[in-house]
Image (cartoon, rainbow, N blue to C red; front, top):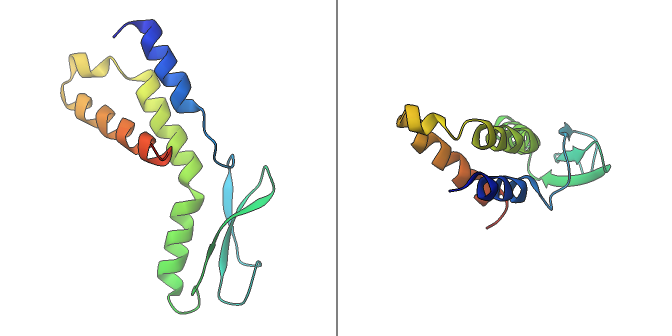
Length: 110
């Protein structure tokens, strides 16, 4: 793959139609027992976690994972952008970079 093709692919991966991060958990939205994930930049509600009162630990863990999504996506994109040549020197990085690309595609709903 040529450098220009890699750059085009990387630029396409950086574009996202999702609400920009950072996202954070907010306990003061909706009805009692609901956790919200809100976007600081928009501001808007990104997601609502129902039944937080029934399964508080699990709901909070899920909300934290969702709130971290923009940061996790950016980190994966950085790995793909800045470390593509590591696979040439260290074959194990080829699988890691492939996993990053798969996760990025999943996040982009491709």
